Image (tube, rainbow, N blue to C red; front, side, top):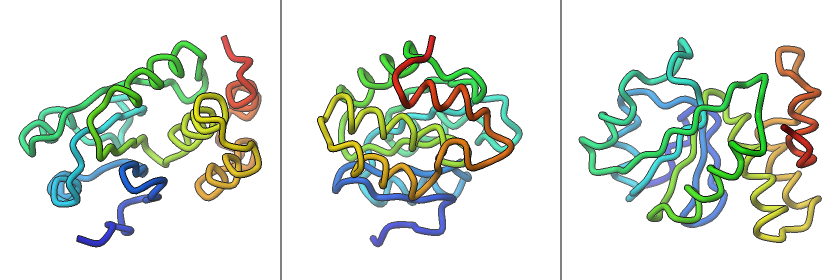
Length: 153
């Protein structure tokens, strides 16, 4: 199966790692058909665009799940530490999502740079395919600038 590029903000980061914005009910079977074995969700469950019962829907398709709710206005290093552990221990192929793929792109940026040792310009270029913190007036730019710099609470 080809990548489902019509899923909001779909991005293939590696042969066994993909990301996107919010999932819809029909996307669960599409991820399963791609062979995705695990999903990490960084969005808040109460967000109006969040897929209700995402964990249950994924489990019914044989996909395991971690939910790491990251408030968009308060990303913290503690969230990043949990994310890194989940990312590195999860079965592959792995998919990471939120609502717009903004949280995910920033978290993956830090993982690439700080954990994987990817050169910063390369990690930033991947992040900026989805989002450049500070470029959207609806985003809390100072919180995200601190987060990507590794200076959050």
